[in-house]
Length: 263
Image 1 (cartoon, one colour):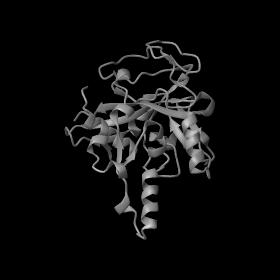
Image 2: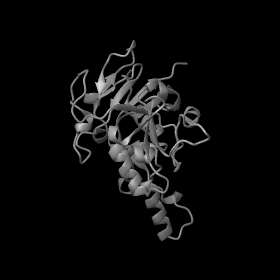
Image 3: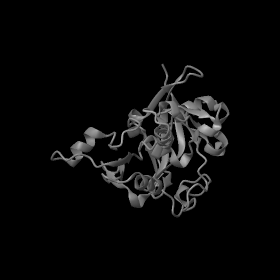
Image 4: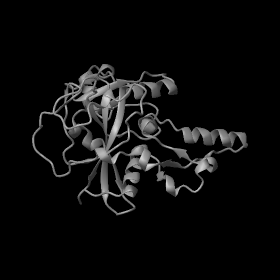
């Protein structure tokens, strides 16, 4: 599946929930805000909006009632955001589980999707061990985190984080107890398929589904539904700074999965 950078930018916009432009398409770069890989989950899931906060402060200082006139554009720099060396096309692959392991857990490869890798090497202060060795292998590497998939099903800006697997989790808890607040993902991509973001490209008119391929810290997840769903708890009342710290230390996207929706 051949996809140009314009379509990839649209896919990132779908995940982020707001229009993301290429750096080259920003007229006034001094008034724009750069989206980086490490802030993507906090941006799309937690509703953290640094560009809006900046606009609000500016509007308040100028005595405006609305920050819309001061709202910053969002951009990304492809060379900093993406790492094509680790792209992989699973589009035409199919069949049973091939027995791969990542972080001590079975790795269900995303057959039917194409992965566009994010540039995450050396982006976190604790190093790169969470990614494992950068070579083809069927076994896990020391210190590696398991693979999970995040469908980005939540409405952007929703502060109360809830599970996309509502009904089944409600049943699993029983006695009317609601699911816990936090980030929900799954090691099973088929669990995530129906919760993916969908967009129609303005560039080529095609419709795509998009999912994030992530790694999750095995020490900071809770397994639910017989290990089909993983939860990273984010307690009610957690500050914005602490929410970001929890997410950064527990779940990290390292690739964008794209699948064309056939009509």
